Image (tube, rainbow, N blue to C red; front, side):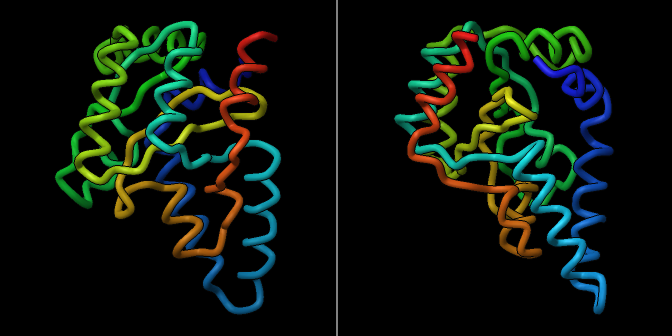
Length: 179
């Protein structure tokens, strides 16, 4: 697990506000294209989200070493809708980082409870994504198009590396669990 995840867990609200602030620079004449290229480079190398089907999300939960539940940071920060806040499922060893740094916000749950949360979120029309930091997949977020930072970065600012579709994502997650 990458050490930057511990920093992110402490300052996640600040990071999301910064991502949206920085992405607005893509709209500026002269520098917008450069900002977009740098942001896409960062997304391809360091951090991005991958859209999951409900079945892929459930399979990843089954493969995870353990799971914890916490607040969806995007909805908690931006409050653009009334979607459920406790909808972010932390995966594997990364769950320990969030449970340790934010014990009031995160708690261990069973895999069955996590899959029920997936079903509830799917019925509410939320999008399932798995979030990657460097080489580690650390969370399944169930977010909405109006709050989700990766969706907003891709849709509104052309930072397409923030949100991707990878039909091989379950295999990649499985391989990362074995290393």
